[in-house]
Image (cartoon, rainbow, N blue to C red):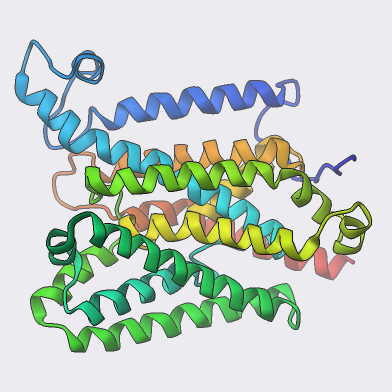
Amino acid sequence: MTIKTISTSSVFSPALSRKALLAAISLLTLALFFAELTVGSVAIPLAAVWEAVLTGTTEVNAAWANIILEFRLPRALNALFSGAALGVAGLMLQTLFRNPLADPYVLGIVHGARLACALLVTLTGVVGNAFLLRYGLIGDIGLAVASILGSCAILGLLALLSRRVGVVTLLIMGLMIGYFSVGLISMLMHFIDENQAQAFKIWNDASFAGATDQQLQILIPCVIVGLIASIALIKPLNSLLLGENYAASMGVAVGRVKAITLMVIGLLCGVVTAFCGPVAFLGLVAAQLARAFMRSADHRILLPAAGLIGATLGLAADWVVHMPWSRHVFHLNAVIGLVGAPIALYMLYRTKALHHSS
């Protein structure tokens, strides 16, 4: 089956092959991963970082190894896997809903995950670190499960709405669902004490720096499972690009494929939101850049590209956040928004221009 190539222009020379582009992005991701381990309030040379990662210690300064392994390495791993998860989730959302602006944040999916977490911590009477410390691994698993269920609930609602409304209306409805969820979260904050509410607000700020080793032991396997499942969906997703009727004629069980895709997206978005908070725009940006660089609609090409670009964006944004700024502290969503908002505006303009020209 041949997948039509989209007309989005590439920022690279046409002479470069897609494999070369993927290799270049992979090298950039690796470089940013180690760059992440060098930045912070304490500057650590790259040679010491490399030694600490390989041997678990550094001969020059033993404290550097502790900083790298206990604080910076978990942060970098979180940014790497969470960025890849959101990139792939954004791509599958755009394919499933046929909307170039589809994104876990824009469609309200992460807000549904936040609401489910807020309900859990309110019902148990504890929140944030208090919840995690009190219940340990069970608490972490509980937050992850609640967040995944919240994501899947919003995805199911969007799937039902998509049968009756157009892509633009669905986008607006997703935004409204997100605002409604945020309103409910604010109401739930009245049922917990001030310290608990403050802890929840800290979690509510998106960050790759807050996840513990125990949480990463849940997040990383879940992301890997989600990514493997997304690879298994490549062929049916390619079929859906040519229409549901065509996919059905090719023997694709359209309803089952959609349901499985929604569950995979819910898993990826939910587990990231549970331990990183509501990360905005990353899925949208990664998917759009993957299309721009690869100049293809084939998920065999786009899926690894979106995952790699998502990981690169996550690492790059977190690298900027943790630079030793002298006066102000940057927030993760602010950094991603500087890239994501212009891309979203461009896609809105391009969609409107195509609508008027047709």
